Structure formats: structure tokens, C-alpha cells
Length: 262
Length: 92
Image 1 (cartoon, rainbow over the protein chains, first blue to last red):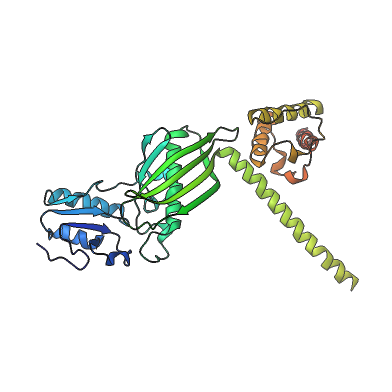
Image 2: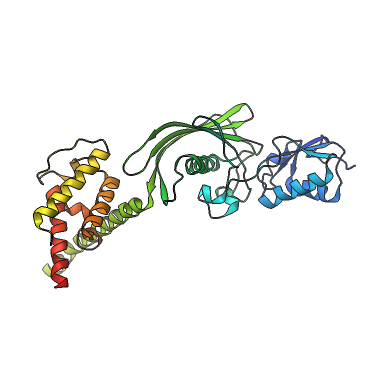
């Protein structure tokens, strides 16, 4: 049996959180994931310990918790919903696994979907710094963007053609803090319009801490066949360069005539 | 060898096909219509240029033309007429 630490005063339940969330880890019952792993590896844990999984854990840490708690069961159990997994990297359009912010997506109704927030503390949108105890809004916005990308690619635009997602608008409201605890995202498709240049989706994503609605993000985005998008960008880029060159020439012209006049 | 009339009528047909697909009003085009006012946004215009590239095998906006300089439907058709004529002359 171990003695409870200042951060895990209740020996029968702890919540593992990424070590970087130092300000949040002052709350009793939370434990830095590295401390928990050290205790699980040594077997230095109280009988009947329930482990909750918060935010900030890497894939390797999640995998190790899964292995160690299996080995120590039934003395140690992982509280529901268990040890989360991350969504397929390819579906979120991220190149680095640590930047995937959500778990696998499940369908909960007609045009309704859900996923867990699964945040690695080294995710790019937290890389610079943390302020206070909560998860910053920009991280939640990126989680929402990944969520609508996965929903769309998994359930609506499933063909082999390469596509690009272009955001038309995003509106967000934040009702309460999201702390590095278990959280879920829900997606509701509000409108789907087919056009000659790809479907346009309007959706509402809500982020929940248990029964508490923490934030709502409304988005409109278009999924464009890549060849249209490439052509559009190419035309616009060439036009922008020509316009800039014209401006530079126009700027230079009076100066030259001025020099000549002098 | 495509004539100017062939090229112009293909451009008009492709514009109207795209407008119809986008649920926008289709009209008999004369060539005088401002390109910015016929209901094609930049994305639809990109698709039109892809369609026309498939028809004619050329994209005048790759090198010779800038889209903002092409003000009317007629000027758009002219861009294809000229590019195809230049291509034909170069291959003679």
C-alpha cells in the first residue's frame, strides 16, 4: 500500500492528467500521469484503485496504462469509459499522431455523431504555453475541425477522389471551462447542399463535460474535389502576382520620370 | 480545326451547363455579358476552365491571360480562340 500524495488524497480513485497541466494538478484526486505510471509499474497502488483518464496523455502512456491495469486487475480498474484511443490519423488530416485530438467517431442517430476528446499534452495547439487550469479555446476549435473532418470523410464523402476542406464560416460560444478531464464532442448535421463544386455542410458541434455543455461551434465548410481547388488557387495566385507586379511597376514609374525631369 | 464559332459556342454551352447544374438561371449568351455577373464564383469559374481544358486541350490562364483581365463572356471565348490559333501556328 502506498501513502496518498498531496495530489491523490483519496486513495480509491485518481484521475491521470498530463504532467504539463501543473495548475490543474493542484486539485485533489488528480495525479500526473508519470507518477501514476511509476506507481503502476512498481505495483505500489492501493487495493481497489479506480483510475480515471483525463487529458494530456500520449499514445504510449495510454497504451502502458492499458497494459499495466490489465496486469494489476482486479486490484486496479480503469473507470468508464476506459482508456481512450485516438481516431485514425489519416481521417483527421494530421501528419503527426500527437496532433490528433479526438477518438474514433460513432454514429448516435441520423446525421448525429459522437467522439471523445483525446488530447496529448504535446499537441501543436498547446505547444507554446498553458494559461490557468483549462484547455484553451483554440484547442477545442481544432478538435471540432478534426471532428467534422472525420465525420465527413467517414460517413458522407467516402469516394476515392482526393478532396480539400474549405471553411466558409465558424462561430463559437464558450459556456464553461473545459478542464483536462474526460470530455465528449457531438456533431449534428444541420444542412447538406450538393453543388457542382462539391457538397457544402452546415454542422453544429457541442463539447460536453459529462452533462455540462461547455461550448458550441457552428461551422460551414465545403468539400472540394482537389482538381477544382488547385485550379482555383492557381488562377487566384497568378492574378495576385500580376496585380502586385503591376503595382510595383506603377510605383516605380513616377520616380523614374521624376529623376529624368531633374 | 475548330472555328471561332465552334469555340465560342462551346464556351457558351459549358457556361450554361454549369449554371444549370448550380441551379442558377440559364440564358442565351451574346458574349457581352460581364463575366463577374453571370453567376460564376471563383470556384465555378475554376471548374469551367477545367471543363474547357478538357474540351480544347489548352488553358489560356496557365501563361498568357490573367482572369481579371477577361471582363466578358466574349473575351473569355476570345482567349481560347487566340490560344488555340497560337498553338496551331506554333505547330505548323
